View 1 (cartoon, rainbow, N blue to C red):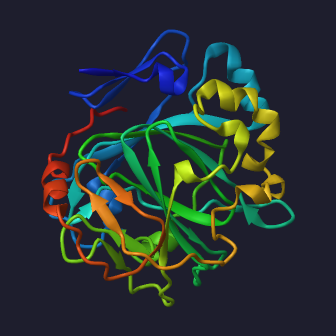
View 2: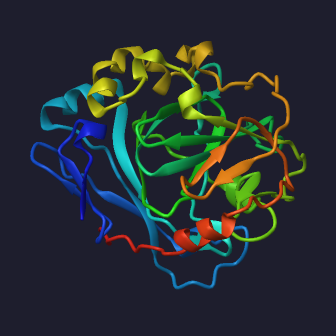
View 3: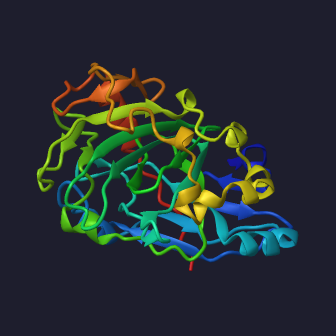
Length: 315
């Protein structure tokens, strides 16, 4: 079966669900692919993973229509696509390794990134810190459904989690040449929270971090960070607004209105997190505290998500 991603991206792209492979149509460049394997995450999994060392996700380098290459290069921004098939590893939902963006400019802030989910459900775990990344000021889980976008504010480290039984496919727009800072996540074996598919707690605090703070939860569809990027946030919409998206390369241009809800330290009231196993999505807003009870029906979600689909291998 093939998923047509043209409506979501504006580009001639399909996704082969059997091979877990992107199919790029005419007019697009042929970007290189970067892959991550089980062993690449040995230093960030919640628990040791005995699985065979196979590919767990991949992403494209800069992707563009031939006539647009100059515009992207002039803006120093790249657009690409990430594919994370479903899976559970050591009891944890499949995830990326986590990174901060390096500091840049005279104000010594990290740059932003724009994410748009094209298919599936994504949980984007963000944690705010500055070098040497010893103190986490804010921890947020952003749930993003297909067709929704959000912007990672400056100075938030981030990783992506696929908590559902279907592939998570999303696009990214980020400064060209940006070299991620992975060390702080590896030194503490992951982010400040793990999202577990198995066990009594859905979100488990990583005790290698010295300060335990609540994990806040927000939905992308409840935010309006950058109105020009409201749905649908296609390749063309980003391309056409590159001059207005200077914050991707210069954090001093990041609009205050694009901060995450409560990101200034004003936290909403605590609530109980609920999980909808049929829709594979979280319900409610506010704080998510460690030790929330395992919601009813989670075993159904675990069983479905355990049907891991192996991605195609790309050079």
